Length: 238
Figure 1 (cartoon, rainbow, N blue to C red):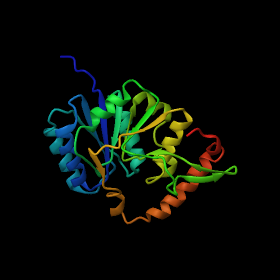
Figure 2: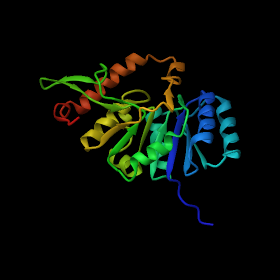
Figure 3: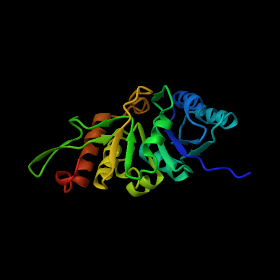
Figure 4: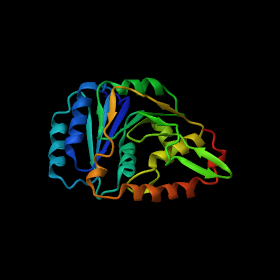
C-alpha cells in the first residue's frame, strides 16, 4: 500500500499546560481534514502529564497521523515551530498555538487560500494598524509595520524555506512573528488575514505561567528587531 503524503502539517509547539494541547487535539479530531498530519513539539515540558497525554493520542489518533518530538532543552516558541517545520511532510505548514480555541474547519480555509501560492502568509489576524510595538521612526518617517500574529500562521513549505523560519535571535518570546512578517514583505509576500469566527486566541496562556517580565522581554526584542531592520524599514513596501 502506497501512502500519500499529507496535504498539510499542523504544528503545535507546547511547554507544560497539557490541558491546552489536549483541548486543541480534541478540536483537530473534530475539525481537521483527514489529509492533515499533526505534529506535536514538546519544548522540554517538566509536567509528566504531557508525556502521558501524548502517549494516549499516539494510541488513539483518529483519522490523522500524530507525530511527536521532544526538545532536549526548552528553546521557546519560535525554535519549537522551526523543529516542527523540519519534521513536516505536508506541502502546507500550519502553525497553531495551543491557546487558540478552534470552533470549525479553518484548516481547509487556509489550504484553499494558499493553493500553490508560495508568496503568501495566512494568519488568524494581521495587525496592520498602529499598535505601538510595530511603530518606528526612521529616516524622518513614521513607519507602521503590518504583521501576521504568530498564534496561527500558514504558508507553503517552499515559502517557509524562502523566509528561513523564525529568527532565533529573539530568544524564547516575542517579536519573532513581526520579524517573519517583515521578511515576508521584503520578499514581496502578501499577508492575508482569516478574520474567522472559527478561532479565538486566549493570549499568552503559556508565558503567563512562567513568571517572566513580558514587557521587559518585548522591549529588548523591539531593540533587537530595530537593529536588524533599521536600514530597510523606511523603504519597505507595506
